[in-house]
Amino acid sequence: MEADMKENAQSSAGVISLTKVSREYRGQAGVVRALDDATFSIAAGEWVAITGPSGSGKSTLVNLLGCLDRPTSGTLLIDGEDVKTMAPSALDRFRADKIGFVFQQFHLIPYLSALENVMLAQYFHSITNRDEALESLAKVGLADRAEHLPSELSGGEQQRVCIARALINEPPILLADEPTGNLDAANQEIVAELLRGLHRAGHTIVMVTHDPAMAGLAQRKIALSHGKVFCSPSTPLITLR
Ligand SMILES: Nc1ncnc2c1ncn2[C@@H]1O[C@H](COP(=O)(O)OP(=O)(O)OP(=O)(O)O)[C@@H](O)[C@H]1O
Image (cartoon, rainbow, N blue to C red; front, top):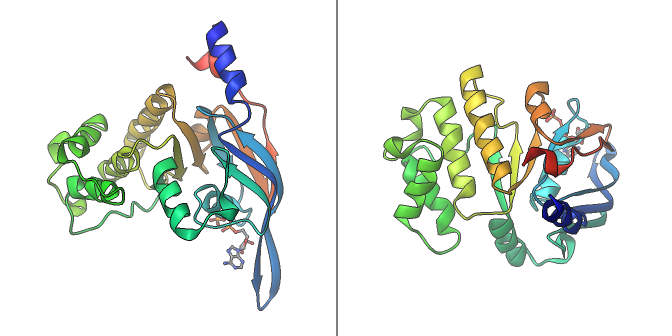
């Protein structure tokens, strides 16, 4: 227990850290401040749910945390690196190393098999390894569906392929945007159980969800309202081991 507490203290600086981060969109109608002065950290190994009504800034925040966009102002550190100052090619590489994405719309390539979809994520690292991709599919219970096209898989199975794809490069951070949004109750539970396992294995999970039951699985909620961030206290990591 002492070792766990020490580990938690060491990680309290945050694998993700925002200081006064804002994102403004400038359009013909004027300026929209979609994220307004956000300051918070997410510790390594923490499971956080991002909640908030439509238009509150969730996608804006996810795009920033996923290094798909940059803040208008403020400092966003991921694993201690300031993403705003990185060159685009370095940022692409950084993103591929650090972050696995799971989206509500599965974004699988329709004419590639489940296995090839997973291997495509390896391809961005210039290495493809069929056995590793198969192992990743086996971890989500889909070894026997490796040769199936996405159209030959159920919604829940497609989402599990996405999780296998997100994990293939062993990123420390999993960023999930409504990972159970399109799934029925049985498949929601399968995905929830996979996320529990990933959390136990030490992954940092940041998950946008409208579903209170899913949000309840996380240790902490980050609620957004009109671009402002409100963080609940974190459940100590030691209680979940
Ligand atoms: N490219 C853009 N240009 C101008 N305004 C934008 C742009 N993208 C988002 N916004 C505005 O920023 C605010 C936050 O949008 P965002 O998409 O982050 O919300 P959200 O919480 O993800 O919503 P939803 O749950 O409906 O997807 C909204 O008022 C939206 O209209």
